[in-house]
Image 1 (cartoon, rainbow, N blue to C red):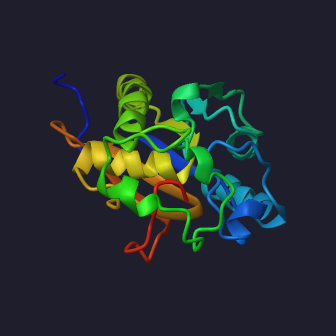
Image 2 (cartoon, one colour):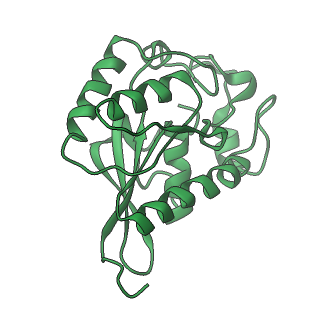
Amino acid sequence: MADEKKDQVVAYVVRHGTTKLNEENRYRGQKDIPLDEKGKKDTEALTKFFSDKPVGQAWTSPLLRAKETAKGILKSRKIKAIPAKQLLPLDAGKYTGMKKDDPNANMKYYHDHTNERIPGGESIDGMHDRVRPILFKAFRTGLRTGKPSLVSAHSSVIHSLGAILHEDHKAALVEPGGVVAVTWNGKTFDAKPVLKPKQEKESSAYAS
């Protein structure tokens, strides 16, 4: 398109705030749990971050913690986030709810073998395949309308974002309540943390 702006922000991908399972260092997977008190404060900080930013169409994971985050960000706008199952976090199967340091929670194997299905869950490659279409729908909507889309999701979705755009699942990680801006430079999409970038990436896990 001849009139596209370079380095245009086309979407913001938000990681929801903290939950009780974050604080307990457990794999959350697709367990539907609400934000804890700190998570609610994370959402207040996100609301402030977005107070001076335009937002167009919005999508959210159907899980409560992501919906609560989107609702807080959008509460002063006439926009409702559309629930999308494609934005569910990685299904960690039998490891859901287990502590990350539990020797029986062998998630590293599935990080190294991304085509293999987690027992009772899904493969990391399978998650990439379901996340990709909804992310690109959000990007293209923001590009077309000139108002960045909002995507309220989970850490594993942001892992997928990095893998899809940069072939590196750790490329754009953020802490709970963090934000990744997706930009278009006229040729490619780029993802970069703009709020609460994750400092320790070595041990970062998809199902965190």
